[in-house]
Length: 202
Length: 328
Image (cartoon, rainbow over the protein chains, first blue to last red):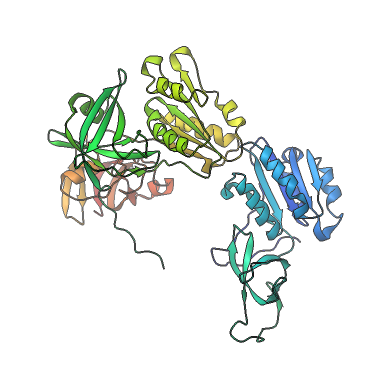
């Protein structure tokens, strides 16, 4: 099952809903990995809407698992991309050409949704009208508050910053601008005294 | 820690002014220009702001909100344009009939409940009749910022098209005028369909026009955050009723032609307000007890608040029934 119920947290932490069909002249869907399942579920509610959509899909570790199923929805366009970064030029072009009324649906990991939301906001869509549904991995996109480097797909707490090597504590404090959670040095006062790393939400 | 709650005040700070010019624009609309009595500069404001004009009409003090329509960065004067409403409560008639150059009046500091969203990539203004006034100021502001805007302005006829000729002359490529008597109408579906992402739309006009645009935009998939509107409500007359103000320990009578807020003020009780038109939320008052029915007319409270019987906006709402006790 790709649905995870996040426990209650501080107000900074994003919360996600369930994708629902909305009225609009055009529909843009961006998903990674198990996010495909949310699009498949949406198609069960409104097949015509998904058939009219432009879908950008990044399979990540799921490989070919969902690609055929997405193709079977016969979306107006389905672009399968090796990574979010690789799809970014397409995403920006789509947003640049779009008109008011475009509906944006984001689903999959938090890092993907946060970054795509930023692009949509920069294009002029208020974040309050961008739909998001979390599916799949609970890995986080983290920013080291010390060196500002981003570490993608963090699964454990604490973890080692992939840029500066500090031991970072995973906080729920989130930045919409950076589309990342905050990682703070856990052993600043007593270097080397680092608690054992545990998997997030275990 | 959150900041200490600010005490709600009875209106914004006041500015003593003198009427510097009275310019009739057509059969219904007259522009009034004010200078400060102390000769100083007015505060700058932002497009869409209004001021509350205090009118001493015999024994009655009238407080009517009007959109400031002069250039927001021109600190030498404030201008409002007033449409005469022969069936109204008398504020606009007083302005048209009684106010002369040289009269001393009082305005409030500007308050903006209808500001531009400066994150917008494009601003589309929809004006109906006298609803043009806030857009005059917004356009002046945007022109200075090199903003991207267009205006769609519906008026009854060429003779009543306030500022239409002036706007068309200055901005021939941005301004589109529609005359009702020539059967011209805004093609709203077509207008909404072609707008680039990041467009914000602003409506000022009659209630029917505002609702029409909100509903059409929603059906076209527009985010509600991108659709802005302003409608000042004038208090409607109604049956007189009695109210007990428990904090001030007074029982007051609200007359047929005055609002609850006006009756509270007449009794010498200081009550907070800003817009006096059901929009700003400043005059929100707690209901302690009631036996009867509310006539809620504001745009501020949520439907649940209206049903709860616990809150009332005394600037535009009324009451029918046996007793009403307010926490004021």
